Image (cartoon, rainbow over all chains, first blue to last red; front, side, top):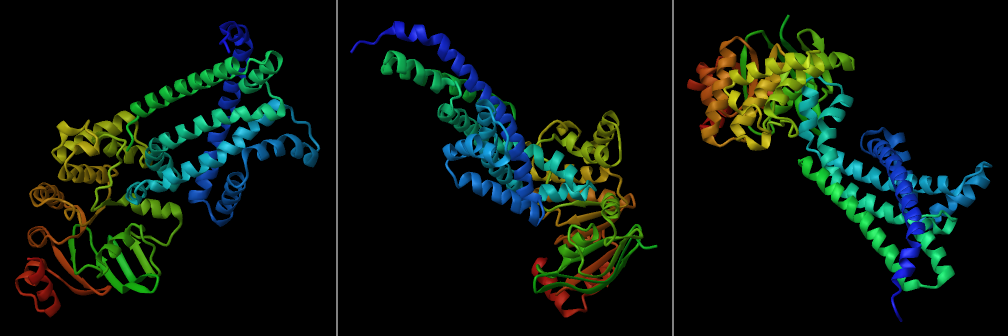
Length: 218
Length: 242
């Protein structure tokens, strides 16, 4: 077969449209996921029995089921259960928030609990309330330790957006699939899609490395 | 009113009894040196004073405030009783100067400029002015411990607690820390020091307490007790450390 460059060039606008949506979903999902992860991670690490049990159940449910099942549940089952309408975009962002949130909660918990106990005692011994010790003494050290696994999770979640092909969100993979269905140029289109993902993740990796370099990990 | 008053204080970890109904009064200006074999309860006794360990029985007053009081009272006690740890426990994300300026800004409401000025002064006092912008990892153990002393002093405590402050240091670095502690004692600071530095006890201490199995076995003037230990177990202990 012959590699048709023109096919790729023609499909670029549509693929870029898809890439834009992919970035948008990942970005919104990860901002939300990080906040959710922070909340549940702290609940797991420092909460009372009830709070940490809630955290445990959430993390257990998400880690115990495939992400495709979670997406399907949020898009098809949840609207029936709660009698609401959910558009595909909302379902997509929610899925990333819920899924990434659980994994990030474990990252947050691990990072906070890895900080030596002596630092907490030193903060308390100065007469600070516990929340200030967590925010100003333990937190800054924990956040630095979180960066490598957090970066990993960001990359995984960015790629997980390709799953939204199943609920008809026009992100990168879906756009490619539709072009392919019309012109049958599988080699050109899937190559182009792969390269766009590589570029997106390359940029993300570089950004994460720069952040890590700027804050020394302690 | 005593600076510190233990009233029948008990403490246990699980089934192990660490403090057995301890009674003890420490007055303002005393430099109390706590010695004893490991596991005798001396570190625990110290850590009960600023409520890093909660007591299980009796009562413990620090400048009239009970460690059994509300959270706000416990915080007040901690602000009055500065603590220096065996492992320094400096905040690694902050420079030496920021470590010292942190406490008063958080709990005494000092402005940033004010806290930094005071921190410079305190670092000068412990002889570390030129190292103020270094991070803890860039300092030697002795320097880290001196920063830790300055950090505790920054909150303006009425009492200083030292938990084996030189045990993690090489012999040649111990002296610089002990000198800072000695000058602090000479300024009249009330101090309670858990240590194995018998020479420090003799030179700086005004009172020596020998602990054993969770109670105070011997309590008296250091020179007398060290030169002429009548308690056989203290005599035995001193032979092992000196």
